[in-house]
Image 1 (tube, rainbow, N blue to C red):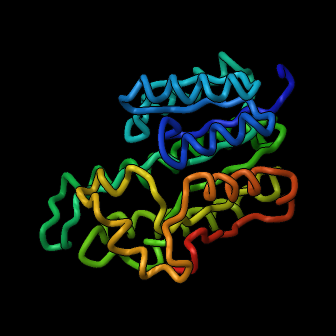
Image 2: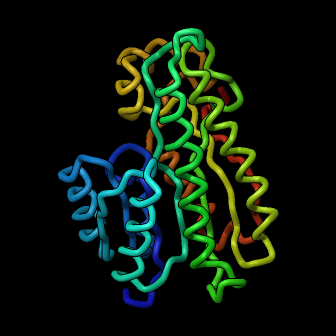
Length: 250
């Protein structure tokens, strides 16, 4: 296990992030995850990863804070001594609102966490993985959303805009570091059965929108995790700059 690759998953204590941690552990990765406040949930995911035979670590860190991001990566350095993959999963969504109801505090927090946080985490990963910096290469997978394409009208156009930025960043970064041993891709989940809908105050959102999905159902976090793990794997060795939709056709 000491020689196996190390993966960092931001926002890995619940939902898609937790599913990625569990599946990565099952596939032989050593895993580190960040969480904002729910230490109990994070420790549960760590125990699940350890039961799968992995070495796992949970670190409290808010990706909306550069200081927290630096501390997160330094903690991973001390524990594992290497980094081979980053899954930029941490993100937020705010309460359902029209744009003419949004305040600047909401918008600044949305962009700081979903966009700036992801870019800063990618920066730190590149500093460790790029062959230009003496690294072995590696993989970055960003979590975008089908909202980047659909726009989130009347619900969260700001969230959709933040994910549109992630799409553009994925393409640009893939081209920037493609010759340095780093592949960069994004997964764009659609309507997935996670807690994020409740956090936006829409507990009925899955039931209300499932009819708009061609496959007539919401997806599961594990189905997104499978796509993420494929992009992390050597099976995707010639795939970079890709935006992979996991949205049931919606």
